[in-house]
Image (cartoon, rainbow, N blue to C red; front, side):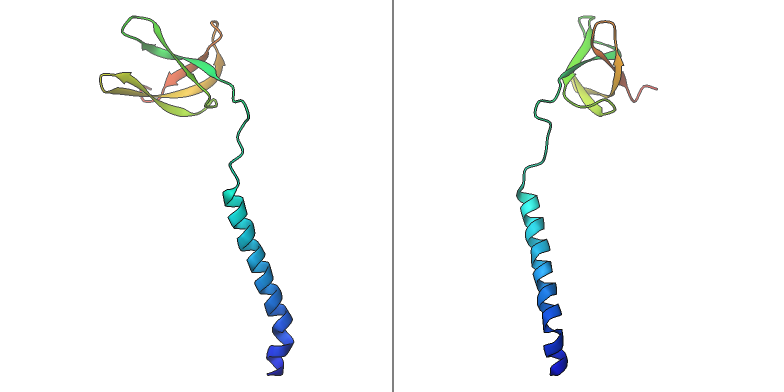
Length: 101
């Protein structure tokens, strides 16, 4: 019985610390994710891909360079493209098809 009485402060302290950790995790989950306040919208020209009108396809997005996105071309066709940081002469950024090479 004296062993239980002697270890009671450690047990109560451990339960208190565990309760704080659970409460902190719960509060962190409720907090909204941090995002950039005004993400920059970039325009990307997809290389080697043209619209039916013959013009190059230009896509606007806030995703960062290096992201692979799927671009719907219409009539059930889709193309995966990688966004790059390479700036083209028309002030758009280059996007290259992934599955073609």
